[in-house]
Length: 310
Image (cartoon, rainbow, N blue to C red; front, side, top):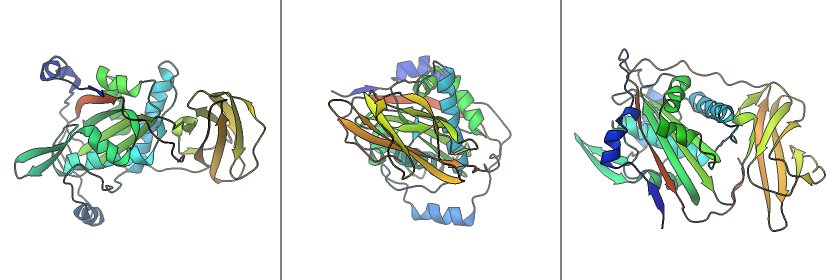
């Protein structure tokens, strides 16, 4: 039997302090014609499945970096890997919240002043992130910067618990700005899949100025061997989940790959990082009221198959 952890109406009343609302100066940024046209192409009806347009990927990446910093600062927890599937699920929901102007984990369709529930939060997540074993979600609204929203999530026990859950290995973050009462909407989706063991370089930072990087590999293994880019494999050595590695010189994207094995199974994983690159964040959105929603968690889904690393 699947274990689903939600908040009943009673616990919602008890934990209403988790829903933080801070009044700020109101205002909404205009939606650009190109972005508006892209939104018009997507039917935000039903449970999802369509990829929403990117509003500010730098904000989304920054939230992942901040989450991994919090995990490192609170018990040296393993870093999470940003995945395309969870990112798409989170980005769609963030956009749907703004376009249909509601604030819930479950997905709704708006018809005039009426909201109609169409699916469970994790049914939506599963349209992109398939064969997962456990998942969770945090949502927030009105926050201007990644730092603001992560600070509020970390100040809320339920949201903090999701961020610091040692069992999760993957994360996706969605950000939307433009419509809705709060103007900005943020979604974090967390997950873990059986037989998927992500590698994470430098806490999932996008870039580095140093060839020496910190590497974390999820899972429990006996031996591993590594390589840079498309070069030859190194020798087999005892497995270490955390270590320092030197990537190849020369600016641009570099890949670290690992082959992992025990007496019973083997696996290949990898991660990429940009050397001497930079991501320039867009200006923060204008002020709006801030809002958090109670976190959602679900566990014990059917077994997964291995997937290619990203």
